[in-house]
Image (tube, helix red, strand yellow):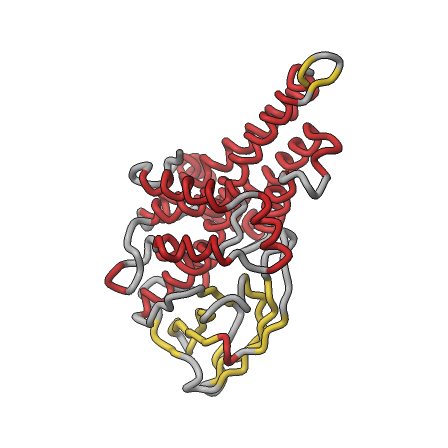
Amino acid sequence: MTAFAADDLVADTVDRLLLDLCSPDVVEHAESDGWAPELWNAFSESGFPWVSVPDTAGGSGGTLGDAAAILHGIGRYAAPVPVAETGMLAGWLLAGSGLEIPGGVATVATGLSLQGGHLVGDATVAWGARSERIVALVQDGAAWKVASVPTSALAIERGANLAGEPSDLVHFDVASGGFDLAAAAEGVDADALLQRGALSRVILSAGAFRALTQITIDYTNERKQFGKTIAGFQAVQQFLVNTAQCSVRVNMAAERAVRALAAGEPGIAIAAAKVLTDAAVAEGTRAAHQAHGAMGVTREYPLHQLTRRLWAWRHEYGTASMWRRRLGTAAHQAGADRVFQLITD
């Protein structure tokens, strides 16, 4: 299934759940309604959104690899559920700060500040209006703190990303006492949150690429032209190779980055994975659509549910140019004598 989890139990369970409850029709209806209640309820009852959050803090326990296996499944099925936001990001911040973890959806906001005890700023927040609480990492002098705000205290303008998933503009102007505030865990700062958010998008993309490759292979082996399947034509074979190569690159990069972060030594692994994923999305989605021809651009065919998510996720938690600059800076700081070691490590 996936190399993320310590064993295949988590991945197998998630796959069975999504196979039963996350058909392309469910994904399509969620885009219209902004929510898939039956699917979220099933995830919530299983405890999957809070995997990797310590059970002593109110989570489900498990490892980062287990959480990655869940996100990989979500990416494969284009499942419209905010599991990455609820556990891997918001749950991680809350658990480290000792603040209460809500029983429902939680998400994260960036770019906010504390001014005279008020939490202020505007932020585009994934699944903002669907969340019970929005969690922010803010700087208070030299210290980093975690703020947890009930959405009932916020003004929210509904929006959506390219994939049709909620991406809301949230206005913060909350007085002291209207939100919970606690010191962030040691080592948690804006960069740590950025890297973790970027990794969540890489893992989701790895899952989507796995499904994108399979759906393209299946279609080209079923579709016939001039008396044979179009998979037999050299031009189509090139599209299949390109799509498969992109999938392998992204999945390998995602697995490497998960292992690095789990070991507490992310180094350049997440930055490299984000850059590689960005390039793969441009190449791989183009090849998949070309292999499908006109069928690939129809609303009724589910290819777009994967490709639009890939294009949406590639722009979240840092642009490719930003991550490329970070890689370049790391290589420059390492110096010519250590560049090879930097890459191989």
